[in-house]
Amino acid sequence: MSSIRNSGQIKEIKEILNAELGYFGSPNTKHDSVECSICESIANFLFTKNGFALYRCSDCEFLFAPINTPNNSISDFFENSKAIDLYTSKVIENEAARKSAIFRPLAKRIIATHPEAKKILEIGCGAGLLLDELRLAGLGTIDIQGVEVNRFAAERSIEKGHNIFPGAIDDFKGENFDVVVFWAFLDHIPDPLALFRRINGLLGNGGLLIFGNANYAGFEASIMGTESHIYSVPERLSFFTPRTLEILCHEAGFNNTSIEGSGNLDLEIVKDWWENNPEIPKNDFLYSVMNNHEIAQNFTLFLQKTLLTSHLTVNTWK
Image 1 (tube, one colour):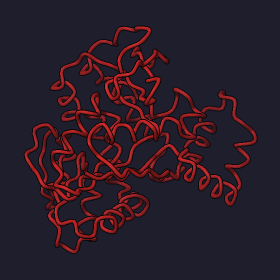
Image 2 (tube, helix red, strand yellow):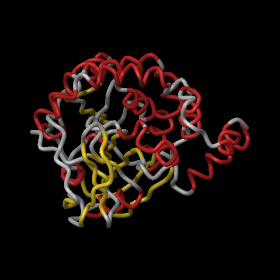
Image 3 (cartoon, helix red, strand yellow):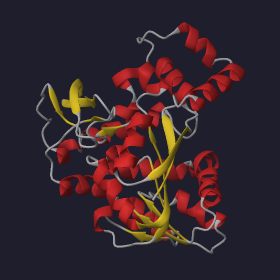
Image 4 (tube, one colour):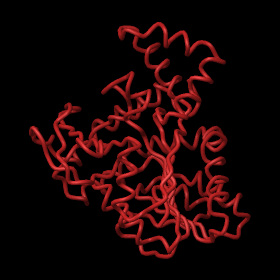
């Protein structure tokens, strides 16, 4: 399994996380259907995870777990979570691999996509890995800021000399950014449309929002079903497909949206899951694909081109 993610680390973090979920209140009440908060269409009950009912919109495909928890309770969770503290520590331990595989290419992509950008904000900046790479790629000429609600992660980023707002994005004061970026952040937000409208207000005219997030229509979730790490309810509350993200951007006032399949760990994640859970029947054909390096690489390229990777990268403009 890649050094970026392994099942042992995930299990350790989940054990701590399970003890912290009281921040989210009691499991929600199951109904046959509810209203989608993105497009206001009907969302029908799909399944229950960790006691929380999840609903899938019949139009935009938004999959979500409604909760009645005050926003400050959710903010308190992310600010003080020991599970997130541990995750941050694991990220720091293998930050060289993460920078090489994810954040260095992303920083270069941001600069290339908006070469005139002089002011960049990252939401949920964690320990500052992307900010590190943006600082290098921008050669010190770009105003780079971060927002991070988790106290431990914010402190690690501040220690590196980054300009960090240690709190929730709703409390951040700023405007006229050329680029706003976030990574693996959106699925934790109970009201994604409100977040995107907030981001729209942070950007100047012609500004770029670039983000990466999980795709529940991707290979990993399709094979692993509700056992996929994607469905870590209620820590994660919102789940997306390419169609959901296109509609979300449009509803929040963005345009010229482009989406690409950027995940490259799907096969490794599923293979690791099968090998660590031998009681789960595995697909022998797919398993043979995973064990042939050249075929696995080509299959991953196929997943990327068809937007069937478990991770997507989106560019959208104000």
